Each structure stands twice: as C-alpha cells, then as structure tokens.
Length: 93
Image 1: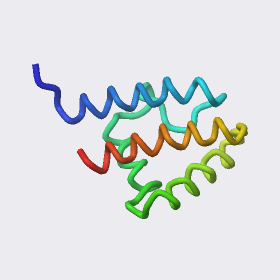
Image 2: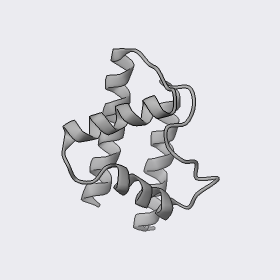
Image 3: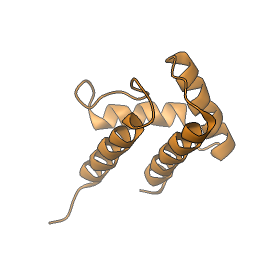
C-alpha cells in the first residue's frame, strides 16, 4: 500500500518529536493533537525558509531560547541534526 505525502510527513514528524523528547524537556514544535500536519508544515516553512543550514541552526537556537529550553552542546548538535534532517526531508518531498 502506497503512503500519501501527508502520511509520510506525519510519520516522520511523529518520529522527530519522539526523538527530540530524548534530549529536551518540553516541546519545541506543535503537537499533532493540537494542529493538523498541514498547519505544522506551514509553520515550519515560515520558520525555516530555504536559507541554508547556518540560518536553520540560528532559528533552532532562537526557538529553544524562546521556549526556555537549555541543553548541553553535544545534545544541541544532536537535536539540530535531527531537525535539519526533517527540514531537508520536507524540502525534498
């Protein structure tokens, strides 16, 4: 059975949220319980326009500061890589 784009994005997003929970307390991104995946993709496109990896990292850092999320440098690198992988997936779908 072939999955739709929406289903693929939803699965990837759920995986991202689960993996992020291993490194950060609190939620960096909206919940699928509160928002539709299309709304979340729109939100992510606003925060992560195709500006390049350095801008993405700056945006992640700003979002974490706004939400009061503090993590060590190693975890920040891991979290950033997880988010970058997801953003790249969205940009290439």
